[in-house]
Length: 354
Image 1 (cartoon, helix red, strand yellow):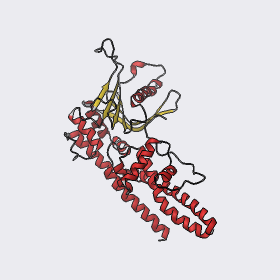
Image 2: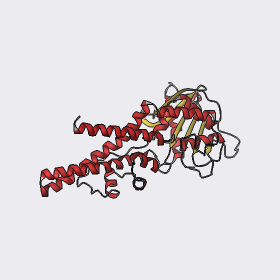
Image 3: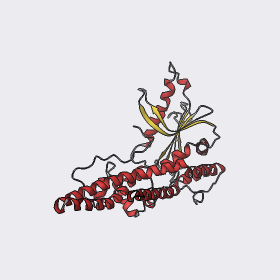
Image 4: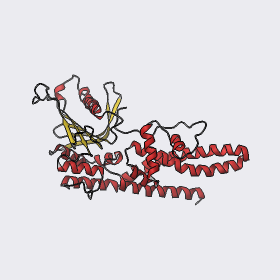
């Protein structure tokens, strides 16, 4: 095997080990794992039954379901969608970052667009055929600040509060901060926050929660999940190394003008290899921040000091448009190239309005 072949083989093996380590640290609140688990009808059903506190028979489930607007253009991509045997439709969204947008108004937008395909399917508008719709947002923080694990909203008359509109729309907001609610519900939310049945905040290890955990473990041990983890990791590492080599070659070229092109290119290559690792960390950290991954988990996956990851997260929070070059310059002290490489924006959250 050539030197490059050995190096590539080592990188692939290292990536596999990092991916497996990441699989252990990820929680159900992490977007990629949430989607993979919610593909399973039983898992989806258990989540809904625990939230709604009623038996539910699901006929169909979909993840990353694209909903078109009235002009036939893509409007939103739902995280997880399902339809029950009584024709109710459910949308469940995992929202770790509630500061970037107004989740309450997003629920209004989602609910309206979910009705569009049904109305378009008939030649005439028959509103009576609109099914009951339940939109559920699961957030890390309590967006209402009233210390409730779950808030349920239906429309009612202001003058007669006991008179409900009866439009079939229910909006539910659950959060992983408050522990004030039904024991099974709170236990599931704490399980999502820290996905381990040994989590001391889980006080009700119900049959449904145990079944949910079984699906989670099956997903984490599946080949499909390994591909997902590898994809997440390789995207950040590959892009970071590419940028790092480019920066290194630029520096090497400038040195080469003074001490000779041959020596300069050699120095540039060596610098590029060193900078490449830092650029890889920068890109992967931006990706992980966008997905809502905790600093400690990101640091463990990337084998980097938590203080460095925290600095990158703070940059991404204050300046959502920041690039890898920005991170390299401000966090790692690597000078910016005179002609910046067009940077792709770091990963945007899935399941959000286009």
